[in-house]
Amino acid sequence: MRRNRPIRRSPRTRIGRFRLADLKDVLGIESAAFRRDAFPAEVFLRLHQDCPELFLVAKSHGSAVGYAGSFIEGSDAEIVSIAVDPKHRGRGIGKALMMHTLAKLKASGIQRVTLTVRPSNRPAMRLYSILGFQPVRRISRYYADGADAIEMQLVLSHATRAGASISSGKACS
Ligand SMILES: CC(C)(COP(=O)(O)OP(=O)(O)OC[C@H]1O[C@@H](n2cnc3c(N)ncnc32)[C@H](O)[C@@H]1OP(=O)(O)O)[C@@H](O)C(=O)NCCC(=O)NCCS
Image 1: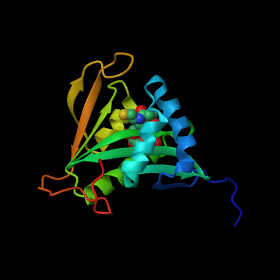
Image 2: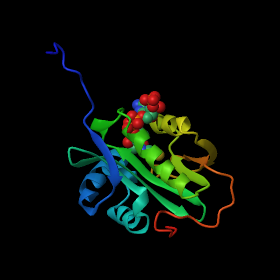
Image 3: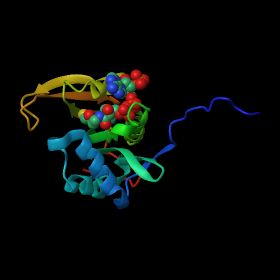
Image 4: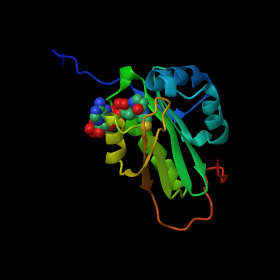
């Protein structure tokens, strides 16, 4: 049957582990999202080296359009950076990256997840709130422009745990 009106779909997006070939795209997204607060390449190379299972990229047509990277220390995890290419925002990519990350953290026995966010960053504050993160403290003059940050926390489990185990059985730090 012939359709009179084409159905608009979002381009197909897949989430997988960061590869070194994604670095250029990731740095471009980071710089567009955070400008003078953008992390340098070294931070992403460390995420790749130390916690590769928790450095995820969303890809569309072979290019990275979003990423999320986290570190683990003991039974806690920190979401170090998450961003989506401005052209691809509002299509569920940020939420999908967060949900993949939280599922991996939960499966590995992580109890607490923290992150920092600008209180003025409504899209991010809203995303974290709908995933269950709660504000725990304000950090004075955290950003390069002197703005405060809000630390948010999500408790995944109250169970006692011997150590993190991200697939290889080794905790990343
Ligand atoms: C925050 C960010 C990662 C969200 O990514 P995204 O792919 O656009 O988000 P999604 O489409 O998955 O939206 C998930 C939820 O976030 C919230 N959200 C997203 N964009 C929003 C906006 N412009 N205004 C208000 N809420 C918004 C909504 O609650 C949305 O859920 P809903 O559509 O069911 O209401 C993206 O805006 C971004 O890259 N921002 C710049 C970098 C940044 O600020 N990172 C976080 C630093 S702490």
